[in-house]
Image (cartoon, rainbow, N blue to C red; front, side, top):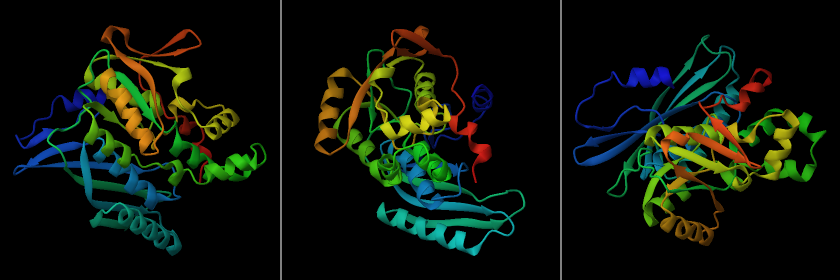
Length: 327
């Protein structure tokens, strides 16, 4: 992140760029003749399974986190030589189902066979349009704000590990838990578009961020960096699915640093947070307060059993411990 910050600080853009590249921000925003377009690009690299579902939802999430509605999508598909035709057919079927369900249009892209990759890589680009009057960025967290988290941790990471390590897990984890994990992509789901839209339409949101690589810890660090504040969360208040706990224990990985699409971090005032939790409850979405925005000199920390654990930099995603053995 420090190399990126140094690079970003030297960039210059024209006046149409409202939000450009910076640490902790989910997407770019441009003023297109009075309309604000929100633009995001993100690849799928950890797995070659369910790529059509992942690439649409992951990019749509970041658009929604800025208070915009995802509308238009492009995809670049890089395939290694010899990749089976069946993969491409399955991918495009997944892609079509995903963007159709969300009311998104596929408007272009690129497909290529190249020896530069050893397994399929898909890069998505999503374009959305600002729905309300305010752009939600991650620079507006204020000391004293509450930090909320929807659903639970590491939905995407849990499902991905299950898909790749299914046979191993069957030997160690009860089938009733694995049956639940098999449905994690859709229930509880990796999309946060619904809860991001609800928050943007009903309360004064200061920041909204969907943690991805590096998990919750990386997401919190990014907000703290963007807003120049400190963050303190309590481990015991963080919702973690039992299935996630079991899989993380099996592979000795930290769920707080595991690929976390499907959860939404919302930062808002204490006056608004209880109201938002209530609105979420009415819409069948679980949400908990997990911490507070504090002064910047306190840094980013997690309190676990009375011990304060400081976070000086964003962690590597725990999935990297397994990625050599995936696929």
